[in-house]
Length: 473
Figure (tube, rainbow, N blue to C red):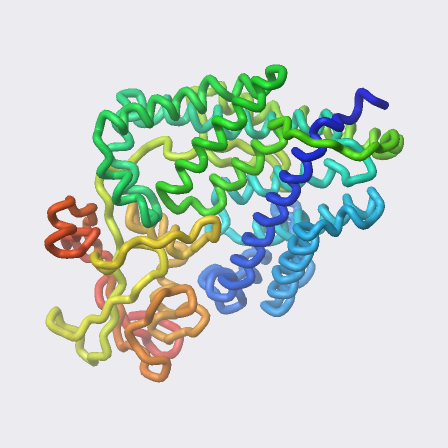
């Protein structure tokens, strides 16, 4: 069945599979290291409470069958182990059917996590990892050539990622149409990186060029993915370069990296593939059936892209098989940050010894330079950015965060860079204040050494303490 396989994409499949396995490893490690404070039995949004009110048909997950923190940790670390084995090439050492099952394991485990992760896992790159990971199950191993239809579907996902993001920008904030969004974006993005300050201070004409180039890459270049080679390779390479530029400009978890990985199979890499036999009939039937299913399900994201009311980052089925994507349909002009502080004083006053909690990634101390964390995802830091946009975003979990800080909960404190209180001396009160942050100028940076300047805006949460052992006053 020469029509079924594309041996010239042998290396393309290999580099794609290595990249996908590496991203699985990062995602499972983040889940294992952060879940207890976020969705654990004593977390801010506990899984047991969620599965009680949401039926399994709406959120298929192993944790509907059983949940304990130990079981969740076992699943997450098992996902790390399988991802590491795949990264090392374990799928090439087993028969085709076993390799497919091996790739199915991390997909099923991560689906189970995402479907009970609630707002902590409500990001587009979660669904994108699942959609791409599901396609990865059917790419085969060294026994067969990469299936043409699966390679096409990977390009189809990449097209929807890029073109959908381009459309949401043009339909959203007018600054994208005026080419002025990058005057603000690097300063107001969720989690700036170590180079974001420098990107922000690039000349404004260069920001216009960046924005225009982004529109070309997202609205025109995606169509070239379906052109003959070498045009398709050039289109994919341009997308990869654009994503690497975004990697340098901020921390977007693995969004940019999975887009890069997704572009790799579209590149016709120079290779000398080994000879392979015809694909087994059962494999051909399975791949074609799954491909037909996914193409049929694609009507939902296509309809969404064509709609004037286009939405970003939505899954259209509980298995996250086909989804819609997009980012930064609107860009903030002003950056606000919620700053959490605690005091040991019995009666809190404005002149009390208020000590600030430091987060790992989100801005805090104006002198502390942003760090690079992506592709690792700091979930609490990202949600704190949303909290600063509106208290409504924080209402399900912010009270739980404050309560756990008042208890000096070790799992919660591990999510932070530093607690200002020793482990055996919890604060008596916690308060939250809203500040406006802006990047300093070159002159201010030289004079003060601070990359941020912040100004107090208003109270976000008044001084709060525990009442009894579990309630807040």
